[in-house]
Image 1 (tube, helix red, strand yellow):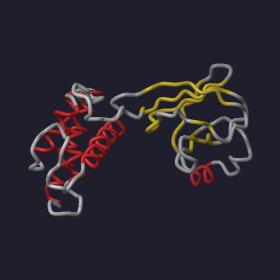
Image 2: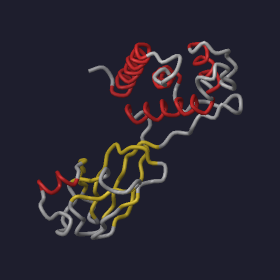
Image 3: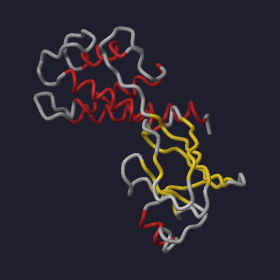
Length: 211
């Protein structure tokens, strides 16, 4: 589906004249607000469901205390530490507190990485727990930040299969209907959240199969 079609659907639901999202005569929402809601819906769906996963390898030096993530990183899916001998060790997410409890002194006593911290560090960086004693390679599976909807040129496709566009629609509606104003409608927004969750469930089934 092209983004202008989706924006027209949003206009119909919100009782605005459908014109591909160009104008919002009620004045309750602006075009930029609606585009932000659509883009947030796309990001949420790919982050929550791992619809598209990108792989990259990052060389890491011994003693490295900060590792740069790709510029288009949105969320981490899976990490593996590969030593110079080729041995691979899966890494789990931890925070600084968990690291201190499990491995006291992990920041100053290098060893074989067992986990990673990406919430306590600067944006687009992570740190291995413990600090690597030897050089190696970090294999990263991550969720790439999707291309944003523009609604400027006709024919621009959303970066999702049509099966998942309804999830973006309801995620955006949930956000828009919670804006404080004349059309604030928490009940309808909650319904939209439930419809978004249905798309999440459908995506999990499509990606993982029936259990």
